[in-house]
Length: 129
Image (tube, rainbow, N blue to C red):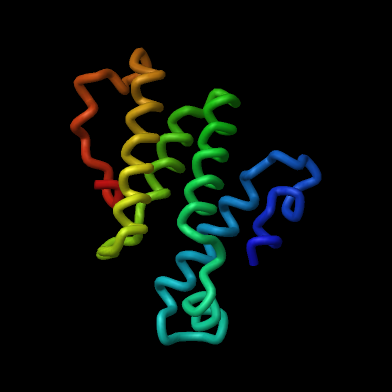
């Protein structure tokens, strides 16, 4: 699956990460929602599409792509999605949550005039902590 999620497999523009990110999110949710369900869900439970490090890298790169395109609000959404699944309590979950919080804060600090000022830093984003 990691090869299928590589940007060059999803797009003719080698660094366009949109399709890769969306495909990964769909597969991740199928695995989580379909626990004990269909064959695809069972396979995804045994072999997740990406490691936490690969997932974090894909997410931060896609968020950067969105921000460079002027869609910083969507970049905040993507960054907030990089947190661990609800209820996850392991070292990987802690790392993913910290990365997600950091990415969201950095985006909000870079775009304070659009409503993400320093006073908004305490806002909790569901799933990010």
